[in-house]
Length: 319
Ligand code: F6P
Image (cartoon, rainbow, N blue to C red; front, side):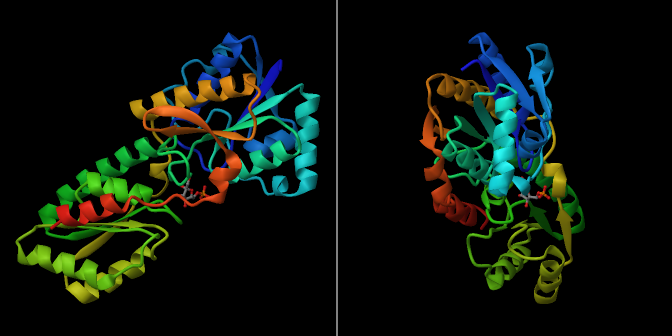
């Protein structure tokens, strides 16, 4: 193998740049050349490749987003799109690929592997919804971002004796809501994996008021309910002045945390090592402090489940 390609695809996540930097520098250290592929699979098909050097990844470890940019590419779902992508990879002399992203990215990577192309996936998504790895690049940063927002909202909530519903990202998974809710001391945490029990939320708020609590923080993962409707229902049922704060895309940006930078650096380097070792169709996974390779097909066939112990703990602690 003389040249490898690197791309980022799907939703961006803080730490993707640190992973690109590690992959490029580890490859160069091992005598390989690297092509950066812009806009994920879209750029692969359209031939938007650029030579990556030591300098092209300088000064990026601290930057959020992805210097290679990203896209969600529908054309790559079709076999004809994938064939175009393969032709472009070959034309540019790329003999192995590192794909950084979430499950959509991995589905594309697995399709390439089935066509005989060596590929390694790196889990990069703020959602942390990738099975077989305890965490993904970007998750620690987003949790810190949300906790910071909770701290700020709590100040104004206390001053005005209000309840706040803070809507966080997570259409299908509640990892962000659970971790940030636990770390931020939220009264209720609502996640798509569990049924929404309105009576419990109402009861929590009323109990808090009766105990003299001067605020209530409810963390709502976006996939659970429409925030506005939810707040309207709460006000009707509790009579407590309640505001909605939708954190939105602020959660996807920002400088990656030290933990994400370390994780991304280790994963980027490991992905190159796996390609050199002749591995393919694997994802770099993190378990118990160590990296290992896991079949992409295995990761894609499962659903990562929420840590119910943490969920119950958060409930107890918010008494
Ligand atoms: O990156 C994951 C995620 O942030 C989800 O939590 C969210 O629902 C989704 O991406 C929205 O992203 P987009 O609008 O870019 O499709």
